[in-house]
Image (tube, rainbow, N blue to C red):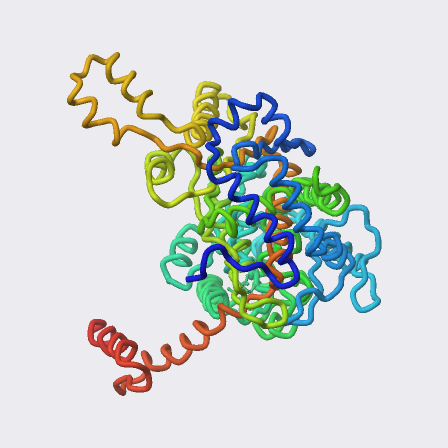
Length: 554
Ligand code: F6P
């Protein structure tokens, strides 16, 4: 456990100390009181960008808090880091790579150079390839091997090669071409691919094998199973594979070795991180389902947010404000988790998507130069769509001992015509933010129970149980409507907010060495499971579990 208060990141001691001193002024305040003292609080602490509106007034902050946080960002050279990223410098220093998801949606097409070479012509060429392919599948000119249209997309990928396209496709369901079906297979658990194949038709299914490396064990195992399934049903027709299998990868050699023609391969580049890749050809399932024009609108929304992030002053910069509020929560108020609560069923996969985006990026324990950090880094990110969460974990959020800063996300317009449903949904979303902030005092509870006619003794027994402390922070993001453009802007907002935190913490948000050890050990254990000999090369628990598992399989 790190001590509290947490020491400053190196070089930020002065602004950090100023924030620590300021914290002592904030601690005794209750959000309920600071709201009643300042009727302009909502106007002061809210910001509009395009069709996104952020209310961050329900955070324990004053104008001074923000000024001190902006100073912290200035001292950390946040503007410099933003420029370094946008200019294609190799800020992923443990892999020697640029970080250019912003180039994938650079609709202005201004040159962005890596090693002196403009990447935009290649980005545009792949977008063009996606457009041609998408149109020909959607209009039936690229059909299955028997001439029937390809109507069932099965995307096989994991992590960034799954969560982004899966989340966005689900969010944009109202825009799908009628008749199209989609499956996203990620888990190596055979149930996942079995369920998809049970619904697939070898004449009308298009398999997209999505893997940056084309070596990921789960994806390759699922891809080979799909290939076998297909050949079994087409009497070993290898030629037909070209009509039913395409690949998205940086690894052309491995794609060829798998048996997919290079003409059916969509490239991307090492400077695109897996969890930042939905904007690349990894987004192919999205484009197939909603059409290339809408995929481009998604890119345009993200590009608009990129420009905002790059050029807006900190004081009017949504991603900077959110990222700094996260620092305030994590390092000064000491919260260890962050809830993402979309009040939109279509955004139900957003929390899972953001778990990878945030936790794989900022779940780091050493600084960019390898020194152990002395302060906390990324929090645990979790969430569920509203209103479901209210009937599950909101109890803890309101009365538990673990503070949970939360993002509430609510589109003002829905895609359905059930007005009453949308009104109830919106009312619940806004009411929860109010309840968390205000709470309910003991005297309010007493008044309520007295009015209900309860005897004095019973009232006193119930008061502690029915009191809400309040003073619990949240951000509310309103969106006009969940369109491709607005969704693009929302995702880019989160990406940049994560980057802001990493700059303050001086960590590399773009590598993920922490996933390697488990992969290596799984290979050893797989061999032990396949062997007839008892497992003995590990600790007693690991050996024992392998041997017990083998015993229980018969
Ligand atoms: O889990 C680690 C990871 O490397 C993620 O960063 C990545 O998104 C995922 O695996 C999938 O990798 P690939 O696209 O290379 O199959």
